[in-house]
Length: 127
View 1 (cartoon, rainbow, N blue to C red):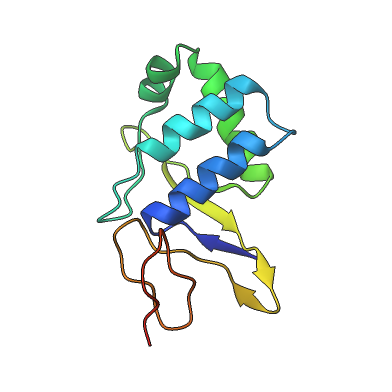
View 2 (view 1 turned 180 degrees about the vertical axis):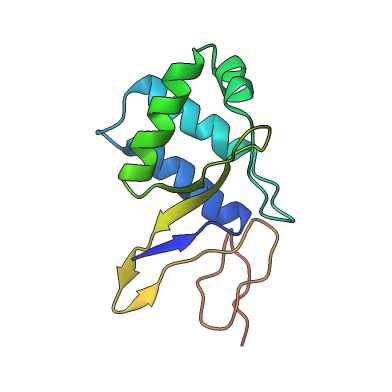
């Protein structure tokens, strides 16, 4: 099961999983990390041009296209191909990790944990 990346923590986890993925080349990892950094965390919008990703990773447009196609096949992203002048839009897919049927999520630094969550950096748990 995969969930959409909707928070800074989700994006961090997604990027961490990309870096640890032995099935991706270093160039593909670099391109996908650059893609994630383009995500507008307020709106969720993620539609950088291929040329921008190529310039931001010092690669060719074709390397970006191949990396995005592989990521889509591997279930790491969803992609809506734009036509003409329209850019393609992307959604990052986070594969859920489950322990005893529960999703693992952690609050961002400085956020208050929800009831029952483990406190971060010595914070007092919410009762």
